Image (cartoon, rainbow, N blue to C red):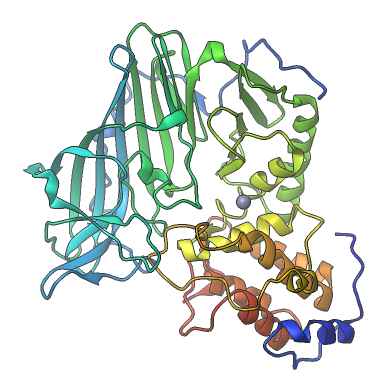
Length: 508
Ligand SMILES: [Zn+2]
């Protein structure tokens, strides 16, 4: 925020070598782990009401639902043959019942996906990276080989599931899948009397969003997610942390989690562990949870103020976070995760530095409030989370000197399944994107760029956004031709027509 600005004409000249055109005149360790965890409230914890109606039985009311599923931002349908069409769907609700058996060390799941087809009928597309053992559609059993895996992405993505059952346009369906969770390495750890289960999502490895555990739509979709977890066997007391209201039907062994109806495949977070293994530290508006036995001490007394300051700073600048009444949840588990991963109002960290914490917290605004409509838009939130929390951004001159060739990095593949392909690409959303923003800031003024992004975030929070929305916002700044050239030279390939998300500011 305090960087000085170079004279504008010089900036344009200096950057001219790195953009396709530059024709516009630019206008203007302190605390030991706290061991006592009594009296700490769990985010969203609710008293279970035994008389409450079973949420599982509550299907979306068809009379309230739109006639056709909304799939405008979904990938296009794909012809499997002259007659067979794989079609994206609109998932309305996911209900997952998980039974964890300590005696056998198995986790069995029965999941129900409630969805509508769009105006385009055909074979529905979704994903699940588990081996299904039984399958029913609208109460009728289907063979499990009715599920076929196809990869429609340009770069190998592990594909999606296509259900070989032709569905009518604008029809409502219930798909029930049963399966046992496969080996999940450190994300699902069994002991004779305890289990630790970390949702452990990743947006840079295809297939590692909600579909790694449960049947789920693609990134464009939002839905209500109800999770029931039941633990059987000689268990010690367990706790389940989540970024949504949790009902403890049987304390320590049975939980119901009601994720909101605008859940997407990267927003929900849960973490199940024996209470004896966790250190909980509660602060104003947040809860830290750390796995005991970590090979390091978490400096809660340093990270707490950093978190409070970051939450207050981002709220002031970019508007309230989603569900601001819920404590912000930070889970440290160095045993299961390398780096950090963001969720809505929650982060999981394997490192204890403040910069990583700030980056992942920023994603509650950029990525989980202004949500990417498609994977190909995911780089925008990484660029914004990096640019808004980092002070040592390399500029384009330095990147070019380092050998970074110009050329747009972002994909136009609607079936892309990761923010970037780490098998073939460098970490460009964290490097090139912020460098381009710095170049724009140098040209138009950092304060103006910052204010423009703050206005956009406040206007569009809670909506899906696209890279074309981001471009449109940046082109409202002075010198749009210069900015457009920067974007097309380094980030966004030229294409028509632009695709806009759900924010009214970018009406399609
Ligand atoms: Zn990030």
